[in-house]
Amino acid sequence: MTAAPLLEADDLHRSFGATPALDGATMRVWPGEVVAVMGSSGSGKSTLLHCLAGILLPDSGVVTYGGRDLSAMSETERSALRRTDFGFVFQFGQLVPELTCLENVALPLRLERIRRGEAERRAAEWLERLEVADLARKRPGETSGGQAQRVAVARALVTRPRVVFADEPTGALDSLNGEKVMRLLTQAARETAAAVVLVTHEARVAGYSDREVVVRDGRTRDLTRAS
Image (cartoon, rainbow, N blue to C red):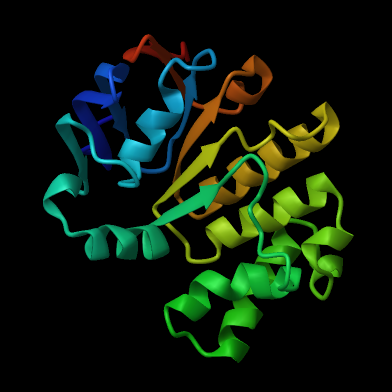
């Protein structure tokens, strides 16, 4: 890879009280690649993702995005990044139950003060791409787990982020729905040149990535795939 990394973590340390979660974690993410962050429960992989996304700040070490130190930004600046440049998919989707699926996907655009008609037009396009256009007027409680997770992926991608953070996105799904979500997520991300940081403990999910980073006891080891 000849281009500069889009997202970098250097020698990250982060503890919760007396319990260390990260102990010198280092990681690089290049534009347009899918990276699987693997590790057992409690290994520090979710903490690493939260530091990369600027949700948590490390006790020491540096996270840079596009050459900018996230720790040097204000919380307002980091929040703005999470609305525009970063997209998120969580294990249980975290859709707003009172909103329709269309309104959920349009929400990030509405928060950026895009007019309702335009926001919902873009949202409808993403629901179509994620093969759930028929759910536009339904609320999350009226959908299956796999359908709701595809709506969550549409919401993550609607702003055309440069990085998508996916934390165990198939953890609550059966294998068939999990495979469909991963296929659609990685396909859509590659079409828009978004990088994906994918936290998982499942080898079949990591199989959708270009590269794997293993986290163990708060330390990282990069596994480069053979071509």
